[in-house]
Length: 384
Image (tube, rainbow, N blue to C red):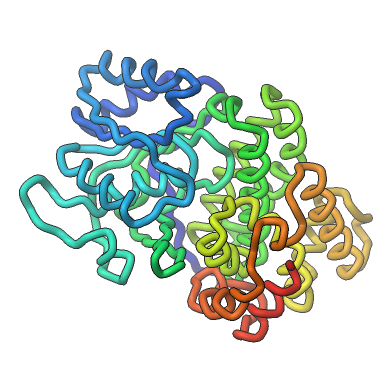
């Protein structure tokens, strides 16, 4: 018997130019939204037109600007403080922006009332069951954060990267406009796009996979595998950008239920100690994790290779696995992502720490092959 549950935003809008509907959608959620962004939206000249659109709908938007890549607890706390005066939260940016906005919407108390701090929630305080409604507008094709109830944070002092999660962080509306990704720098397109591909593959081979997530993850892997290089090399290529946005969104929808795997289990602590971009690390680590997982997940890797036409449909699983591994390594080269951790400044003295931090991760626990402390050490070392 098949039995599973699945969570995703109740309202999804996808399409080139759909950001023009932002003000209209925001007006459904509240009159005083907190708009959370990074810095690139203003640099690209898109922030003020979006704010004007909201004002034209009779809204009085507040602004929390400048969320960095790999944000820490202090950024979430500041956004929580800003969200006290808002009745909804609108996130416009990459995965880090969306995560911080979702966290603030769920965790910020009302004006005049005390509440747990960002650090309290990071340390295990239960996330509230409800919060301010969220409208998520991604400007990168990578994390699929617009479809998840997860907020990933770095505690720099403890050298720890982990997630806070709960239903209150699920966006009420996900508005995905591929046109917003066109202005991404080449490196961001490559790194975030590789994250989307890795997430799709990990969701597909995860122990938590369901028939529903399989359909989403498989299609997401095909879309991103075929479109990433074109999106990197031809930034204004509409079809490639659409496929990457759709694949990222579908992978996010899948992983929210299936979880991920050892790539993300290792990438989070490595990111915490190196500061390297998350998507870059995910791509870099993928071959080593695939080699480790071969004994448990070769049939699924091989099926993906067949769907990508990398091998004949009748090819045995070991041949299909080898073809997908070679394709992944070649894709890393084509989008200029390094193959080794040494290239991103990783210190081998941190290997023991990384292994210890990898084991408690929910992603590690969802990996198709069980992972011991020695395994986590060996796989990380394999990526050196």
